[in-house]
Image (cartoon, rainbow, N blue to C red; front, side, top):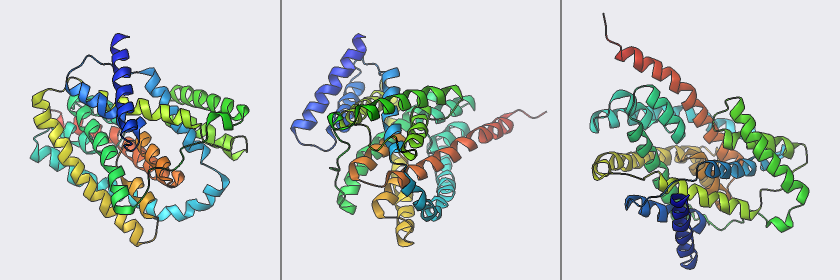
Length: 344
């Protein structure tokens, strides 16, 4: 409890500093920056575990609430850009695996699962089962998420002129109590029900599915309240920063720098696909960028909300990417084990 109290206090100070300096997204970047600095200073912090996972359910509810009958009329228009997602993953693999294998000398399982832009936890689990280095995988993906979440807002603002001031939700006092109760039920039932049936990303996808059903049935008409979304940002920011606890100088020189270099490659690839989508008029620039930016699903949801982007468009592409990566992970793991098996 003492270590978690230190984490909370550090994150709160970071939030306050960002708020007072009028820096963007203080409830996300404040905790993330403060916890990152504290982690690199080896302060005895600890993540929030269950609470952090529960915070993600809020974003699942926010996405589900945006799924309306009108969204379904837009799905055929997304087909062209969604069809580019498998090609995007293939290009990432062809570039990323040799990058980690040849340039940085990672073993085959670690190189593959470090390159694949899936969920952090999923890639660490699958990569470890395939014989990869879990510490290296965790740091590579934490670096990927950290840098993309940090750089994406600047890119959106400077290149596309997007603001980060879109209202994230109405205050709780303005949302009917019945809808607030339904959101809470949808978050809990979707999360735990998703875990029970083995749904990947259950803390986000479960609440999203249940809330979408309630939205389509006309029971929910608003996103979660502003206070809930700010709380989700706070704990997500903490979680990103705490991932770097215990990083050694040797890991900074090799693994984290490899992750930074790889993010630059991913940024070029994502920019290329964003350009293709916009030139073919398959999507608007901001939505296309957020759809192909290979960050975490929760973090991209936050950015989509604050920029006023089409949540349905962004999340459809991220779900497609994550589903394809996760479906392919066990197959690749089996192939790696077969190749690594001694002959004779």
